[in-house]
Length: 248
Image 1: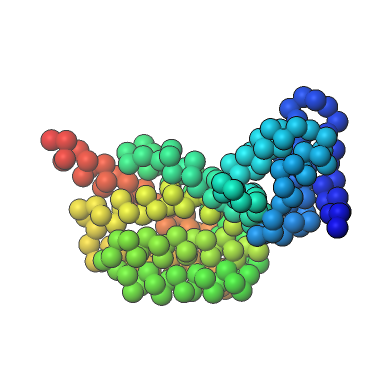
Image 2 (image 1 turned 180 degrees about the vertical axis):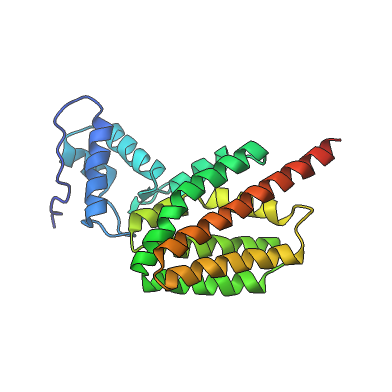
């Protein structure tokens, strides 16, 4: 049985053939013509449909794999993947370093993004996002004094805030920041001035953010997330002081 054509794009120029093929396949994936987990046509079939060589089809699949849209394994068919922040997460994981400058830059970037996220979350209040935030807050409270568990709960809280916006692109962007958030949270949690009272204040700041978003109070959501990042700036200075003592 002959398989029907599923890709809408056709190669119009011999230039950058692999890019043209990967763009057309990506469009089919994002439009839902191929569902996450579904097998793509074999490499040879892709080559025939686009009128290109097998190496070009192979390069197009490699590009899609690097972009996180396709999973490939030696000897197995390529399969579609759900769109996520995984590729960005890997890049940021390589980029972030445990220095005062990188910590401050990471906090600055997240603050710029999450102020808007908190405001939109308060405006839309997607139920799934709010539920994730509530569960993560409970886990934060239960994991005070346990850096690894606290960090994972913190990551889920901020992802829930993104989900509260109901915007899948925002969710993907916040997923892409997990490496930064994980490293920053772990460093902050292990600094010498991290007392139980400090842990509790962190939980309280998260609770205040959730309360504002649940109430649909856009202005308060903005104020509470800004206050959260101001506290992170103070923690960055304490981390720097710890580093200076180590160097001495």
